[in-house]
Length: 171
Image (tube, rainbow, N blue to C red; front, side):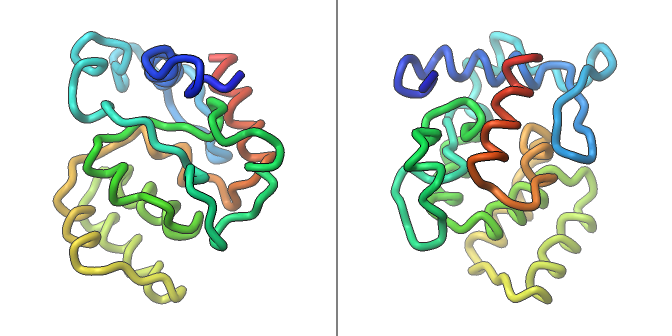
């Protein structure tokens, strides 16, 4: 189902419900966490700015940074290729490559500022650099655990999208 095309509010509710009270495995799957852990399925979260935007992991605008398999297979608007962020973060993520998005998702899901900084340092050592505006935004932005599961995926392709989508819908 192309959730995004059918209903954006439904897409947001499904993503909030899947992440509600969830913990993340090493493979990026969501699993039931302790009661009170990341309470996402609330009116405040639904109406708030932190989760107001639907981010396409493989971006809506095709670029050379992305393989065409997700687009060709019709996975662009499926739940596995979508997550929630603020509008400000969504704009910053844009059509960046998977490698860049993964670094950003990882940095934002770190609980400790030094760990987020180390994420950027490791990316830079690996040849991935960000502009000052992006780096400042990521350093100043609050802890965003909903992005943690995405940072666990090594590659983003049709299989990743299918796997994540199935995991979300089974929650």
